Length: 453
Ligand code: SAH
Ligand code: SF4
Ligand code: F3S
Image (cartoon, rainbow, N blue to C red; front, side, top):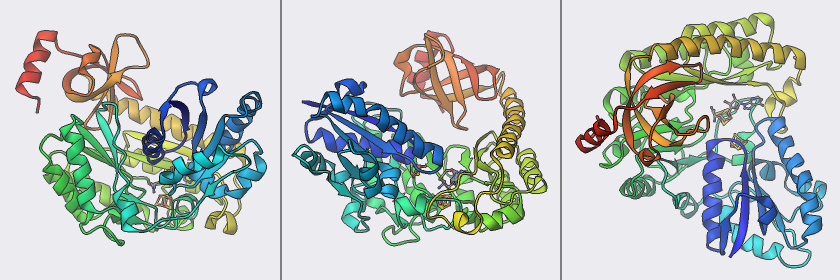
């Protein structure tokens, strides 16, 4: 048996891809190891959404040069979005790199690793695939027991957000056939998985392009009928394509969790126009109003970019205003980072200074902390269902789980609850998580026997 060390950067899609990478490498007799020093193969699954993410890859590769010098037999490979973006350049810049595997070429890894082991070969595969057989096989069945499983429902993106490199590194949108998605979820549920996270860059356009024969809300309706499954989540939806049918699904599908991640990016119409997001501030807010009418409990999260080219103080103030107006439960905020091959970098450059970007980011985060804390405090005293993920990283003896509204809850409790649903009473709140108290052990047994709503 040989050992592989995989390091993953970036989004859930990449985490899911790393599970698939491990799965194909197991077939070539590799087992995972958590230490690169013991590995026969070091593989970096990379992200290039912002420059910082890309630079991390080069510094990691720099660190591992010494390992390679000590042990010539070790294979070092790069996959994911930086591999797709840089291709040949990576091999040129990093002489001790053995292979480059693009985002669509995971199935080719065993072959590539075999070639890289022979003298002088440095294989590289960057082709994009659009055939149905490839889409059928996008499942990543995890071997270990997990409470939440990632399920790919589509790949690529057909949008043209001017700041974003994702369409360039992940290719055009393509939906996975619904029968293969539903088959995979049935199998996962039969093995005890309680929650699925459906993955795609823009799940709302599921089925619009070739391949899928259902719309996204229709797909959700089918998944909702899978008996042993308890919860459905998805990532990510584009506000422009948030349809009335999907909003309706929040009222009718009991397994669909009361949480929506709806990236707004900016609160200013002029910035949204330059970003080519395809919606205005008012259109976005109207969708949020409708959703809240259908599902008053829904928790909302979003992504914000500060310092997009040309962003004035007044435009930035509109972002702060929309944060106050929507009062999101959680946000992910980023400083604009110019990316190669994007429209923004060609048209607008990068004219907001680093200093101003940092100030704006800090201001956004300060405001959001206040809002998140205020919203989380509302939960104190309430009883919430959580899906227990495993031990908490914060404190020994603590377990961690998520509410249906995607809030992290840490509670003292037995690790044996991992993977199951349980009820907790919320005893405390911070801006990022809640503190829960489990009912007494005897009560847990009763709750589990009786099944929790
Ligand atoms: N498909 C997802 C986004 C994937 S990228 C969607 O449409 O929502 C995740 C987030 O990274 C984006 O929502 C955006 O906020 C941020 N991002 C993307 N490109 C960026 C860039 N060039 N600079 C800074 N942040 C960026
Ligand atoms: Fe990027 Fe826009 Fe596609 Fe999201 S929808 S992946 S931000 S181009
Ligand atoms: Fe990064 Fe690629 Fe995901 S650029 S955010 S790993 S799709």
